[in-house]
Length: 186
Image (tube, rainbow, N blue to C red; front, side, top):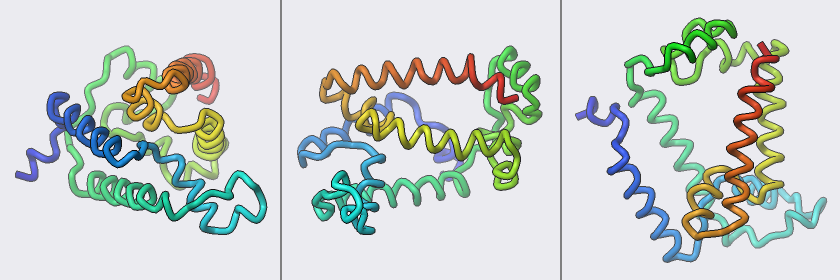
């Protein structure tokens, strides 16, 4: 049974489950997104005394914090107990490019430990990837009015034009980063 859980779910199972979650959120007049949880945490911490941006009714957003905690717990369980031990299937060209960047275990792990580990925070490349990249992602999600999951799943399913524009921007930003910026970091 555990082996069945470790395999990726097929699109025809995962897709309807995501749709079911969206219908439930729509029914309760809620929107999906994780980046607004940071606003709620800052408001609870008293950031409203510093900036009017954080003067929100945080009690109406507690459900989103519960959702975020559930996502963290689910991620922990999945990464520690439900990991698939199979190598990731990558295109040979992609493997060659990653090996050229010095990522020797490309395809063996979902997140290469050569890039994502605590020690890399103290190296220039790791610092840029994790700290500067994290700041830019955080800034971008607030500037865009939400994160990729909020716009791509919730916003597009609600047929919101700003979400379509944001998703197109996320897509092109990712392409620019991977093809024009990422090669210079290695």
